[in-house]
Length: 68
Image (cartoon, rainbow, N blue to C red; front, side, top):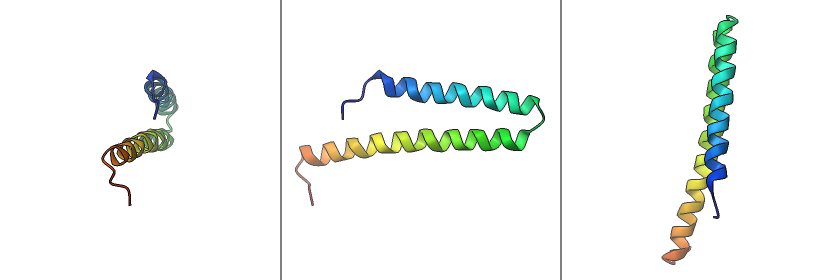
């Protein structure tokens, strides 16, 4: 569970790329595609955060010896 600043930069990078793609697609008149890109970006970031939180809970479980 050795997470450093790289994870934060990855999430920020995904956010910037998704925002740029959303803006470009919206200006091209493809609002539905822009919304799909935003949703997919959100799901990717949510998956990254969920795995980090899962690792945190596993570490807490091992510290307090609540292993099944």
